[in-house]
Image 1 (cartoon, rainbow, N blue to C red):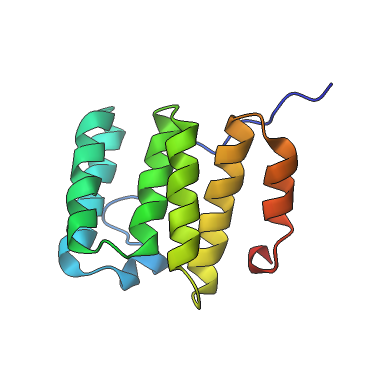
Image 2: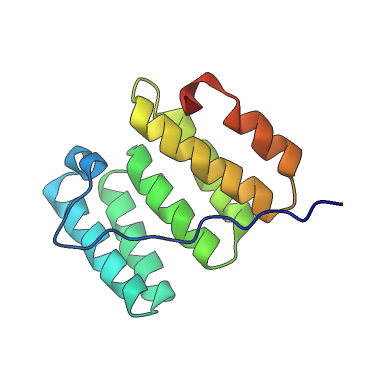
Length: 130
């Protein structure tokens, strides 16, 4: 019997070094994401959640924010909500291969965290994951 693999932990990039995908965020949301990552680094997940939710009110349809929120939900051990975020991000990411890949990884991690390993493997075989 195989044990489910652990989902990737929430990993925030250093605030002073924006990642490539952050170039698709407005300055306001980029600032909020940086703030949320600092809050995570200090162990304040509820504050980070609130901050990301503020960012999402600014750019509701930005898949990168849904991915960020989904990673936070995994860190909070809320795999079901992480799955919801991953599916939403994937739906919004059409045409953006990088965002689709990140959303697919989030979704696979969320499914694994729920013990749904077969479904996670199916997500990982999708064309956008290559």
